Length: 77
Image (cartoon, rainbow, N blue to C red):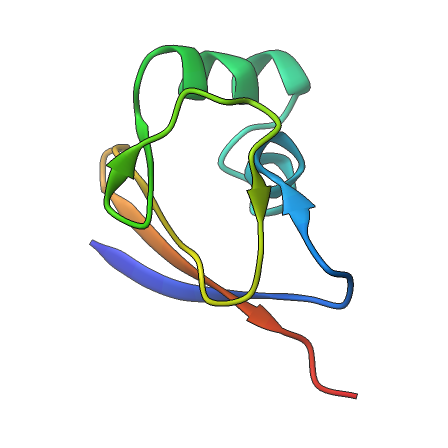
């Protein structure tokens, strides 16, 4: 499993934007499919809300091959 961090400079990023920004989904449609197919967990719980707000401290796990795990962090500066 790949473990990475994703810095944000705003209060939050929504789940679909995050999936596209990290390259796990190329289009909004692909991002929606990842969520709708039940491949996303946020903080250890299954997530089905496409517009879930991710904030610093959240952990996102994506059941891809290979699986990916991301920590949302506040961007310095």
